[in-house]
Image (cartoon, rainbow, N blue to C red; front, side):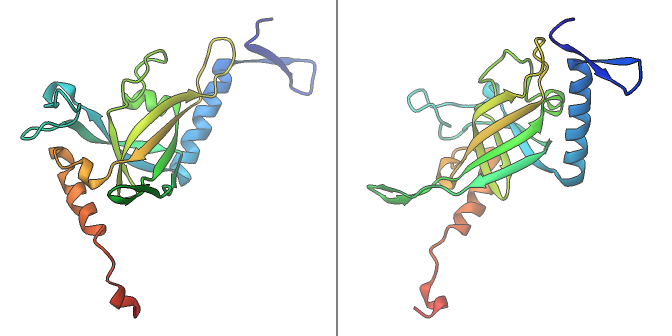
Length: 195
């Protein structure tokens, strides 16, 4: 018997064989049901290196052209969570950056183009996605839940950092998010609170 095949008793004299493909199909079906019933979607933008104008020194969008993305593409997500950033004292004042974690089905990530091949890494770390009214940049994309010797995959975990409005000023595809976010970050008028 191979490492990826298991014999399960069906209660009688007959036995049923289950291999990693069987488990993968059931996991995919379960994740798809979970996503359909309680999951959410994010708007994913694929980085477009060909049409981007990158500053040769700072590796960011050059003035007048900027970085470009293709999208948005609706991507199903089983789970999404946001961690509020830790306040860091800097010379220019306090600065916080939130982080987000997405969990998605490996099969859905493969079908959407986020995962082209299991062995290709870092190909989407310049992508962006919009969720919860914020723009996020992936820090890591991890294939998780390997089943059996064949390496059948179950989920993909994306960890990301919030992109602040001032970081999108030279990015034409995200101008509306930068302008909206800048308006949201106006100082609070303390007189509204009786101070």
